[in-house]
Amino acid sequence: MTSGAKVARHRVRQEGWAYVYGRVRLPFLLVAAVLTLVSPAFGDSGDTPRSNAGQTSHAAPPGTGEQAGVPHRGDPTAKDNPAPSPTASPSAPSGADPSGSPRPGASPSKSPRDPMYGPGNSVRRTGDDSVALTFDDGPDPINTPAILDELKKHDVKATFCLVGFRAEKHPELVKRIAEEGHTLCNHSWQHLTDLAKKDEGYMRWDMVHTNEAIMAAVPGAKIPYFRAPGGNFDNKMVEIAKGYGMKSIYWDYDMRDWDHTKSPNDEAHVQRIVGAIKKDTKPGSIVLSHDNGQPTTIQAYRICLPWLKEHFRLVALP
Image 1 (cartoon, rainbow, N blue to C red):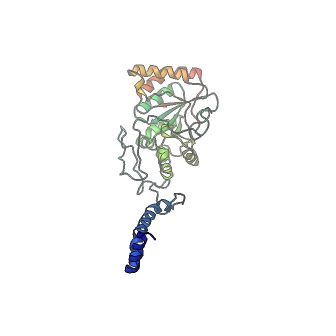
Image 2 (image 1 turned 90 degrees about the vertical axis):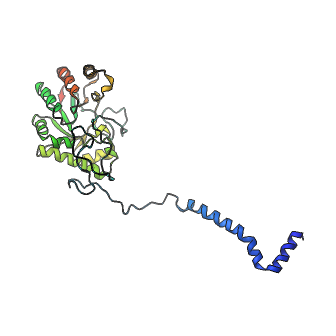
Image 3 (image 1 turned 30 degrees about the horizontal axis):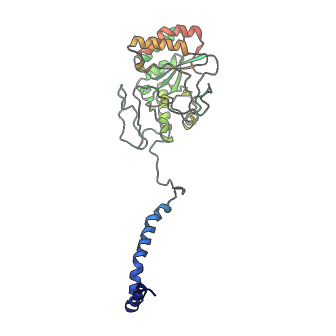
């Protein structure tokens, strides 16, 4: 027996189990501490479904108006000063695009090579050899009457994609658009380019309130189309719009009339648009253009409408 063992046996005889406890307590405590630190890593694997109980939607049900938790109507950053935005809530608007400039960001569900479909299975083309001119983001109190005058002059029908709060503000223009035989399209309440990222309750609220504003100006109006702000469709949004009787339309040709960075002045901008229209419009095209805040677009159409009518069958979407 070693001297160490003899000493240990002697101390056990003298001190009894108190000595043994003192010897093993420290390793035991260390092991316990290690287990305590390690155990949380195994306590929640992340595979266990978590209940959604207690979560509530802050968006109003379709057609119920502005209730608690529902954003006020209007675009807080728009130039024509709509109603102010509410304090932040899970469904409150964010990312409003005051210019209405399209910023496509969603990925097409169909093949990108499929000429008929855009993001979320939205419709990209007319389906025949006709060409459909579309005007987004109005009604604008200056530019919408101007483009309506040009269309009437050349006996051309088009499709107007209307922003809800502007339709509410200018009902006389909505009425004129309908009376002159143009097609009405819902373009959301205030042009939130991230609308597809909102919860379903908010998207429904947005579409319904926009339709209500249009129909307040034109009772019983048919609104057969919906266009997402920026063309940012997804499948869910397209299905929601379909439930309200609206087909989702994208575009085949974007003239980028909203992008003034490519031209040194307005005259050059107009010439660029005219040249692009003549170069890129094809049979079956749905052409994207804008009447809100874009006087140069009106100037471009004054030049190219006769050419378009000569070369294509121009229609309002049915």
